[in-house]
Image (cartoon, rainbow, N blue to C red; front, side, top):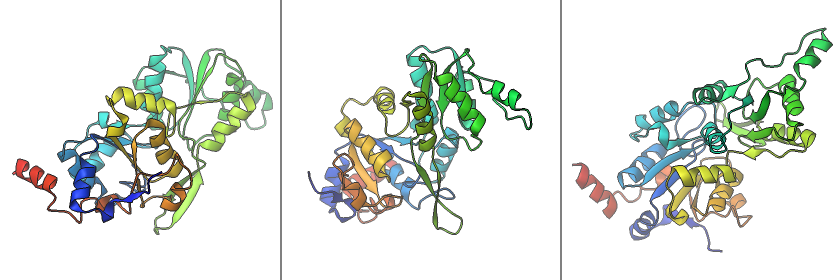
Length: 316
């Protein structure tokens, strides 16, 4: 296994050689180009330069709380022009998968409002009547969480309003063998930056996925990082002909580096997120090919790089 190469230490010649080794860039969002409250300084700008160099840029996220247009607007503010097709998120992968298997039945979805809207816009039939808990009426509560034969699939992703009744209904439906179980991210914890710049963690979707799987004996079809479903989506939608000509940029060991290994992509770990280089180097399938403390440093030491001069000449 080759030693991880620190791009911030590359000579102009080595950096130019690196830049010509890939055609497609797939970048995580949170921890790479954006924190919860603000952009990571200079990160979007580096992606904008890569785009000017002729690279195809895609943003890949497990975060289903924002719309594609929100990400495009944030990128545009930093000079990176993208359209919604350049944003890959969990709900898009779920819709693609359901269409691929010609699924047209009713779905019980435990998801954010943004994801629900996207599913419905795509023609997915979402259950309208959600289960409720009736105070002092246990019989009514139990009736609401019993299996509903019309439901043929359960979708579980981040939902801040997830509660006992939703999980109970999901489990009831999934006890039927034919009911599909799709899940989004499998993170144990979601790390965010608080208003005073300290890191805090909140419960992720992973424990709920495991709870349902344990109670039903049914594994979920994961559609986020890292999953084979997302891999198939990217290979299909991004016209990947040679995985080694793709660069995946991420900040997490499990979601990003492991997923990039699964796909056969070049792996670039940035130091602006949650996981350290030392942690990433502990296992072969998370071991990064490249590292940089911050994506903003990719071009900062080589403003006179030949490729950059070419781009500058073309834009003048």
